[in-house]
Length: 153
Image 1 (cartoon, rainbow, N blue to C red):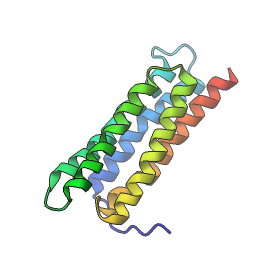
Image 2 (image 1 turned 120 degrees about the vertical axis):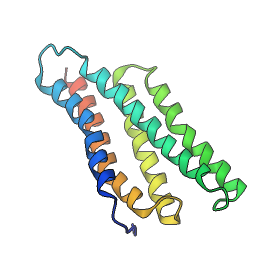
Image 3 (image 1 turned 90 degrees about the vertical axis):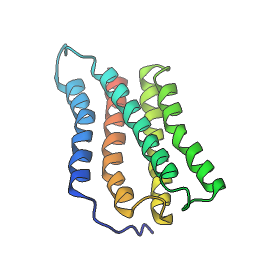
């Protein structure tokens, strides 16, 4: 059972929602814009890779923020976990579009699961883990819609 409490700062909610807009815009372009100036799938892939890397950076920041809170072993584990999203994102950019979107969706899903666990353990503020849920659902949903559109073409 997910037991996370805490109210996210308004600026975090606003910026989180704003950060989801490029995911949505990429899919809207993919679905409804003929001959867009930008390649929508590439826009979706690149933005997803950037954001997945960003989320790893957030974890890195928490891991180095207060060394007294984490044991050396725990800090090392958190630092290792924090670089994995960037590696996954980089690998996703090296493969064809459909596998790329799948890898990115799996990366967001896996990191969400880890971040929710970290929220329960107190590594992250509970509000951060809670905020990650709808934002990750938006990211994964748009990646899967992009994949389905490509499969349909």
